[in-house]
Every structure is written in structure tokens, then in C-alpha cells.
Image: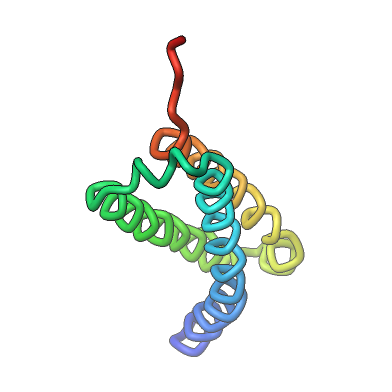
Length: 118
């Protein structure tokens, strides 16, 4: 394997994953906005600088976690299973999106859903 091969794998990974990052972030943002809007006007009372900072940190962490796909993608492209991987890597995207969506929902409910003990 030479530098041009690695360059090709990395270029392929970037072109595949970065366009999907937009979808990933849009889905996660829709979950947060959906819970915020669904719980209006109570959710307005829960907005504090700490909540905004926490949401920002979680958004950054979600994007760092998204980068894990690069490791799997580049390693799979370097293997004998490259052709199969290129056809099926969308499955990794869906699994990662589902996992991130569940975590986003869980954290968002903690921020915006007031639990009533009545």
C-alpha cells in the first residue's frame, strides 16, 4: 500500500461522510427543537446559560463521535472487503444516526420535559 492508496481511501471517506454529517446534525437538531416546541411555554422557563452551554458541548461531542465512522470506513476500505463495504456502509450511518438520536432524545427530555409528581 502506498501513499496514493491511503489518500484515495481518505478522500473517499471524506466525500461520503461529510455530506451525511449535514443530515446527522439536522436530525439531531430536529429532535431538540421538537421537544423544545412540544413543551412550550414551560421549556422557555428552562432555558438558562448552563442549558445552552450543555447543548453546545453535546453538539460538539456528537460531531466528535460522528468522526468514529472515519476510522471504520478507512480500515474497511483497506481490507479485502472494500467493494462490499462501499455498498453497505450506509448501514453504519443508519446505526450511528439511530444511536445518536436516542441519546439526543434522552438528554433533551432531561432539559425540556418537566416531570410532574402530582
